[in-house]
Image 1 (cartoon, rainbow, N blue to C red):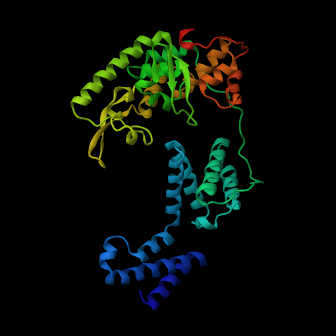
Image 2 (cartoon, helix red, strand yellow):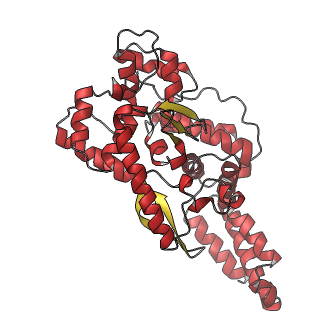
Length: 382
């Protein structure tokens, strides 16, 4: 691009009311791009191999936000955080990018975050939990990606936190929903209610999580990467063993068909190469179809998807004519509240739910009137 053409290009940007900073960035990008083309004519082989120095310079200057967001992914994977955390944190970083009108990450300040959080509360009227999630995500972004001290954020307009009382179903309502669920969703709900599981925890259960001899279920890598054990409901042990036999038959069929096993967490598969095909690592609620992995040209088994369970529960609640807004998480709320109604100790329920702070468990005291110490047992067996 010659000087005259570049001048006309910049004049066009002025007409569109681009800021001087945006104009300078555009000018720099165009110059880098065309200098790269000129060098590529003399170094075509190097360019084809992707080692052109000018090309790398162009990428790093024109798309710094892409690099920053990729860095969030790397930092989260390094700490083995969940995919939901990755999705949330990258989303808030992207929203901050648009709020600051593509301000370069290196020039971001805590004041930008303060203005953004206030915007969320005042203009967008987000909930207090969403505002807190945004704060935590951007705090992580500043500390681990930008390598900046976040400092104190004062004067932020906070979204109002409303008193929250969880929706709780009666035992009769739980049974009514179960009657309108078919296999395997009825068994999933029995575990959600009978063991107080989160839906994601239930879907990720494997064969090795069950100990039928001792009547306990071990939940690995729950929220916050914490492990805990809960009692297995005696009333559904036969159903659980029947499900185990179904998984064993499916596993045998998969092995005969030459499948490559199940998906394993983190780097476990690289440490134990045969683990994906071992019975103990199979999903307790496997997906109906195998998943094709294009990168390795193989078929793998994933677990039952959460959305399938959520839709089944929604249909069952609708058929049951229950006048409450019930979801998969409602059965976990009902688990805790029914134990409190049966006079179980709040600390015991805290451990069964996997809460780090007893204050989180205390929200269930709003649904009952009294509580005393008693040996832990599943509410499905009461």
